[in-house]
Length: 185
Image (cartoon, rainbow, N blue to C red; front, side):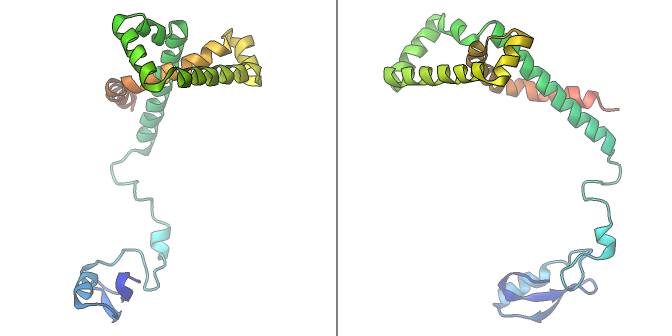
């Protein structure tokens, strides 16, 4: 077993035994206090018993199936929540609703003054070009035909739904975990 400072130790028995030391006495004392790694032979290779042992997360009393079920339940609830937010934002975009209020209009004026009208127009043009690309893509065609969604509106809705999702995380994460753990057998 090679340790820092050029010291080598073999793990035979319970105590490490120094073979060669090219470091200070302080590093020697630190190396001696380092315990041997179980399942590792003197050459640093895994022993047969350690290589066939169960992974370290499989501890006694841990139900892997229940953990997997809870994880999949958490993921499913999370995706359903995000899709619900996306559908809600598509139906009624939050940005125009926020900008319709007095505080929202003031915030928009401050943001435009801070960023500048040229950058705001460039950003708007960038979003519109992305919407055009989505509308022209195969995925955009599928969205138009099968779901009846306007790709331009969908592209403008995606960032708004992501922002709402991130704002809802402090309330949603504990609730989602509670739902997922409740689904455990």
